[in-house]
Length: 71
Image: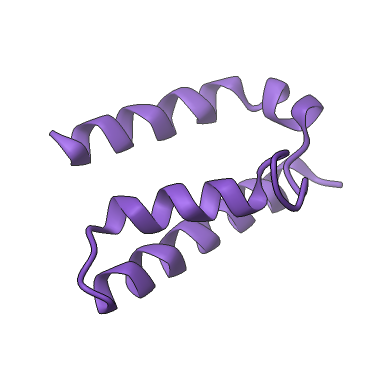
């Protein structure tokens, strides 16, 4: 599939996870992490290891965002 589709899917799941976690009084980072676990190779395998290796720049940016939000 198209890499842009998977990036958009990850952003959408992260956004929705952040909204849901905020609604249940958790920080948005918890929703981002749960969304990543659901999409990743350990649960649904939508974002498999080959795709994640190709998206190295996006992985680094996502880790930087999570680290920045956590403080």
